[in-house]
Length: 584
Image 1 (spheres, rainbow, N blue to C red):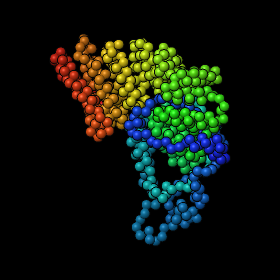
Image 2 (spheres, rainbow, N blue to C red):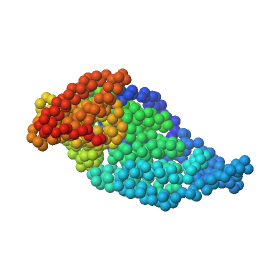
Image 3 (cartoon, rainbow, N blue to C red):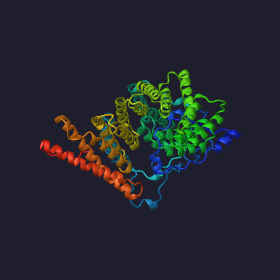
Image 4 (tube, helix red, strand yellow):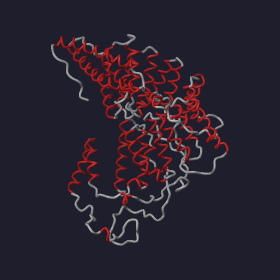
């Protein structure tokens, strides 16, 4: 589950075989918005083909490096001075034209030190308490209290030249397979170490050790699926990595591409990897990563071309276990199951033999094999493989990891196909909560999971509708998470909100004893809230011509009528009004 790392410096001209492989690295057209919405979330396990090649020695500014302005001074920021100085970029003497009226030469003279210290102390408290709202406000206030400065003073010369040594990237080299609590302890210790490093560096991200630490910590975040934290670091460090050129820019591009894949933003990942291909000679890791992204984008034949090119560049006469995994996944998605299964099974066996300690990679391979079995109509064998994957993920990275959720989702489908419906709903409940809580939440998997619950389990009469009540809490978590991330404002949200409401309505009929009636009324309130949110989104999507969701609008109208009738029954029974909408 680590991030990628390709060649860190340019070398000699490509050989003829490398040139042929390079020719395959053509432009990748961005998928349309509609296509992007239907991309498979996890068509292949990301790290299956997303691996780190050996790091080449980093040359200090080769082709593509930042331009050096030798006359610029790499000193801490200085304010304009009125006295003469030989450094014309940091000081000058004002001519009489500028002295007619007073100028604020001591710009920090009137800053209230006590107020700054009080606000800074409060900022510390917000970090320890996790109060993001006050943290955001205090950060803005403290930044605004800094002495005013002109844009001219902020212009800096190029940073000191520095190489990026792989041996220094220790935080990202951890395997993070000691269980969720120990993984969190490790991660927080690295955050503390990085904070102290930043505190001792006046130049911030311009300091190479700080920038190196940021890239190192970002990959550690990726391995732990803390994608929000990783996203913030990559946004902050992009200009500094691009300014330095090779190898910093390539490292940033590759690792940010990994982040985009974990965020289900594969077309953006493809663009980043295209840029890596432009800046570096052909390398197996770059080609394999492009193949992985194409697999995720359902361009499986093109993915195979990249995997073939990677083998050629690597000089593999026969498939190694990584190649078997890559080709097995591509062939599985092409429906070539009889060819795919032996490759995946052999890759799994070789990984168990060579790296029996690597729970996460072995779990991913069990997941791949299980998926192939299920697609071949062999659900019991699929159940065995997904069960193994779930157990390995659970003990090494915990139930909050999206990888654990992926194994539970595969196991849910296999159990349904095997006719083991009660077990299937248990795993579905786990999968839904996993998706509801994660940083990279997306409406599509939520919609699909609700479809399994309704259409495969409840509507055919395989399970009583009351079981859907177990999804009430996870649904509320998912809705709040979507609102927090502004994913509640388009037709996708409207469609998934309607399906959530449908599930709550099915388990919210006004029947049973007093306790059951109260629970049903609560679920109907949630359903009504969701339908009220869904209706304008669905209607706007239909009106814009983006998609025809008229059938969803019809369902919403019918479901609101059912809610009205069920609420009326409940009010007659209790002789009391129904509470209003939920305060989200």
